Amino acid sequence: MRLLALIAAALVAAGSSDVDESAFRYTRDLGAASSAPVRFDPDAAMYGHARSGFPDLRILDADGTQVPWRPEPTAAPVAPQAVALVARGSRGGTVSVVLDREVLRPVVDRVELDVPDRTFVGSVDVLGSQTGAEGSYATLSRTTIYRLRGAVSAESTSAVFPLTDYRFLLVRAHGVSAITGARVARDPARAALTPVPSTSQQQQEARATIVLLDLGFPRVPVDEVLVGSSTPRYKRLVRIEGSDDDSTFAPLAESDIARFGAVDLSRVPVRAQQRYLRVTIENGDDPPLAALRVVPEATSRALLLAGGFRPPFRLLYGAADVPAPEYDFAKLPAAATGVARAVSGTLGAETTNAGFEEPADTRTFFERHDWLIQVLLVAGALVAAVGGIVALGRRR
Figure 1 (tube, one colour):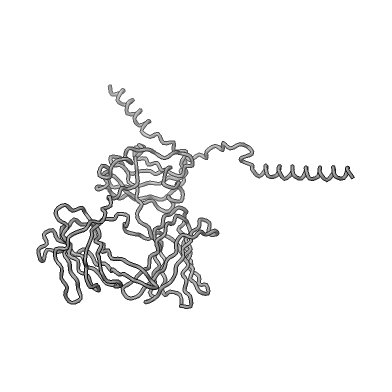
Figure 2 (cartoon, rainbow, N blue to C red):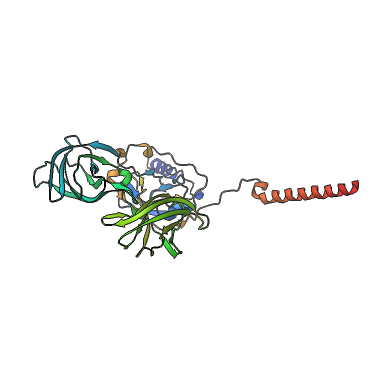
């Protein structure tokens, strides 16, 4: 019986992974503290060496078993929901309203305010309470709000705060005449932005500042570019272009940046997945912006590993022809993935997979030597031309 058990165990071990490791050019370790679900953010090298969307990514656990993975699920958005204003007041230039979200209330992270003023720049403090009793409110956040018209047209009347299920929200607004309505919402698409590692080169032209950002690898996602400065007041046009070869650039975004008073419009939205970003700031006849900072930023695109597998894990990627994996884990609802108890994984250094084998070249001789076809075509044309000249000479 013991011999049969050993044979069975050996068969399970031998069949625990159906991954042909020789197809993958790159590998690296992923450390984790437990067998709970693991989340990690791909780095620039992984974006650059894997195929877009990671269809060639395979993950093995410490026993060599293939580990299902998926993009980390995010909380479903909550569409804006109107809430009742149950108390209003104004004192010393501060407008206060209490919002009652009533008994059934989802977790939210922002309140959208109706402000009647045509133009304004102000700020909003948001506090929360479960009971609404005086003295029971906890401070959640302070947010700048504004509505601008003219040379700079922009509007933001949403106050953002950490996720909360407080029933009552106390809103104190400064710099506005009134708050006439409000809606609460949750928008996971507006996740926190973090800097994307990059190097930069800056040069001045006659009427512009040009900053070249190098992200190190192609396909690295960037969602916004922060253009910050210590200059106290300015309004400049910014153009962003992208390239993978630092030679041919394509336009990606164009927007005004501005700073004056409490207004700070320093971020340019962009959808970029190129290695190089060229940021051009039009200065006109004004001096270049002082203490200029140009920083690419992106939201998290973390991947989530299924729980129940033994760390450390090993990542394999960089395969040209393997199809995308299909896991039940990728089809489960977010609540069934264990994402709420996920632990953070630590990526090790990328190395070349020692077992990698170059795939056989299945192209025909002429597909591999297409230049030869061009030579033969040119030679044929020359022969035909010479033959035509000889024939013409004979007719004469």
